[in-house]
Length: 487
Ligand code: SF4
Ligand code: SF4
Image 1 (tube, protein in one colour):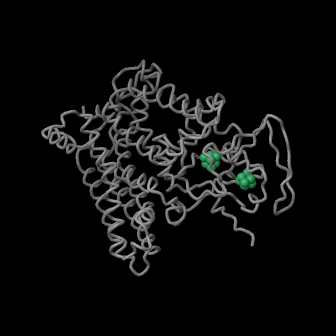
Image 2 (tube, rainbow, N blue to C red):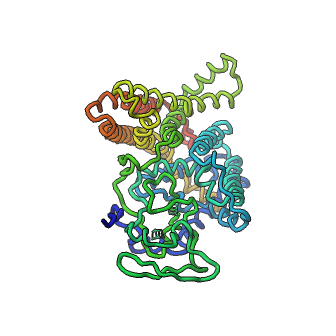
Image 3 (cartoon, rainbow, N blue to C red):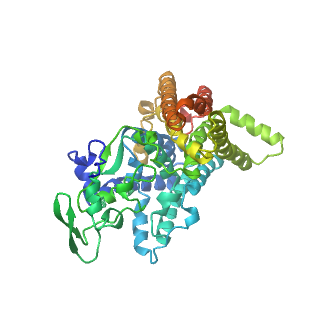
């Protein structure tokens, strides 16, 4: 039987102009160069500009505007930031220096390191008050370029993107909600393809050609100096079931000699309903659950209860602020989600008497996708506050960077806080309902007649997360990077 094509919707790469640009050999570079220029501007302003955070590109762009736009892009289009990521440009240079193509250490090839680096980034952000320091933010950007360069010079695969980058990890998790995904058009073509250029690359110093016998007849496949590398993350498109590791770089599209890969439109979050789309591993499960919790902890860290908790910790003998923050993020962002997921899985087993048939790992993994929409809702509600509270302040900051007088009176206006609050509530509630829908589908799949008791612990956990986030958003939140609006 001929395998079904897995193209799930319209191919974005067939759209006029946009599709052409994306498929073009230098298409990614064309997207990366503007962001590289932006990164350079941030570094210059961070090092040499005014150290007044709301007036400096280094703090305003990454901590106020970028995050809001990134979540919007994830929801409406896909992982556009990774697609245009400038940090991979020196990485490409580093690849040329890589003498031995070492694999990344096997023990580190999961999502554990990514989870630790995510927590590390949030901790560094809090400990060093990065939103208030253009200089330190500029150093962080430089460190990011250096880390990408060093890891790529040392290892033969895109280790930085796949296993380390905290920004990429955030994008990977929430691109599972996106309405697009890399997919092959016809699996039969892949079966007959001898070169597997999508992963091996079509670049060769010396040109050569072969003939693949495809279902619709023989077709020539060429390799040569005008070819491109294959998937740097070593993903094999015919087997792709998720966006979880995909940077949307489209190298596979450009390398495939049979034009058999699409950037396919799909039902947003479609993979969250497919049982085998994600690997049933603890690292993947915990990453997705923890990121939703970290969203709550991050909002918590900008509200008054954070300082009350720190005072209590001081009275208990934890006087050191970095230690206090380590405790808050370590407990709230790691121990609590791990404990809550284990407890919910164990309760689900007990209520449905499935502990022999389903392990804790399988149970937790089945419900992990349900944490993606709520986690996204929490982050989107949080970031939309910072973004919309002063959406146009970027304009006077750019004007001042270019040596012009900044029109603060015109563009430094505050957004409508009631409207922002309503939007936050809608994002939270929408994320929660979406999560609940996914969780109940998982429960019916796993437990059938016992679906309701099996769903109960997970539904309560999701509800508790939503209520905690909702409560925090009703508290006065620090307007980091835009606090000048308060006068
Ligand atoms: S190179 Fe293209 S046709 Fe060959 S296996 Fe990869 S996606 Fe399929
Ligand atoms: S599958 Fe690999 S090469 Fe293709 S877009 Fe994703 S990361 Fe890039």
